[in-house]
Length: 386
Image 1 (spheres, helix red, strand yellow):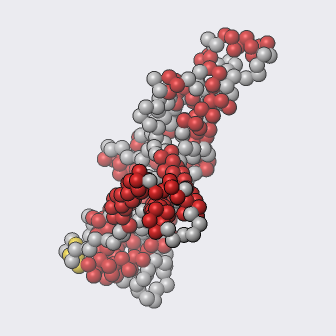
Image 2 (cartoon, rainbow, N blue to C red):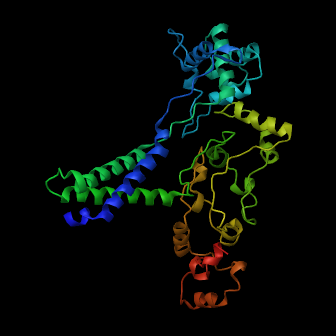
Image 3 (tube, one colour):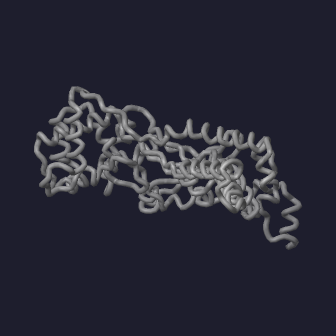
């Protein structure tokens, strides 16, 4: 071991590794800085002090003696992983940015909807303080919510392991302070192995988004529409059985129900008003797509839903139980291949598979009891990558 680390080539490897760690630090350490840029002295004619005071009222820090709930207790400032039926602070800011303080006060203090009237029943705030909140919301509409701080735990661990490896190599080659040489050698092997595992895990995650749960422009609950109101999946996504992609319902389709239903039992009027306004303006709702596949992968809903008779939940999970839809499975190639090996095809009395005469004969004679997707070529490379 001692002779190995004394070689000139190994010293060059050490210098290269130190350079690599320094290079990584140079490009990653800026991510550790979370200091916010200084706000301008004046924003929209209002001072920074006025805006901050409005934010304190919104957060419930002012007034000191209050009996009602704070604004932020219902109207969140940051994204949530569960559905908050109340509009977010950003939604309110954008909707009322162009209105004066009087109209804003009327909406807050004299609401007309059942849900909002119940939640604002004991709300008591002076006109001046409410105007201060409006100043903060106007500022929020321009600047947007504060960016979420990135999670850097894995990055810090990777850099720490790099420093640990550097120390161990330096001790083995130059310092020689550790009596038993196998200790720094084991540190190098163990830390480097763990670094490689981190790199492998992060590389595998590229292009995958399991658990992805974005905020949508309208708070739409599948649990409410499918489970509670018994709306069939195919009513909204009616092209899933005979098209490559399952369609996103148009605004006109939504208005088939919401021409009458103008207030939700939990969400009130705010979210449905977004739909009504889009319909009246003749524009579509810009929904955020959740399930993505790489460009080099071919996937057809018609093949799986129309011909294969698969249930939507097999790929998308129990969407009918979700208030906020998320990606249930990782949609990796391995996941698809395993599904093809295990999923029995609806083969009998299915005209799509009528040409597979040999398999039909084997089923009749009892030679086989079922046909899985892999038996009919589902796992051939050219099926998805042609």
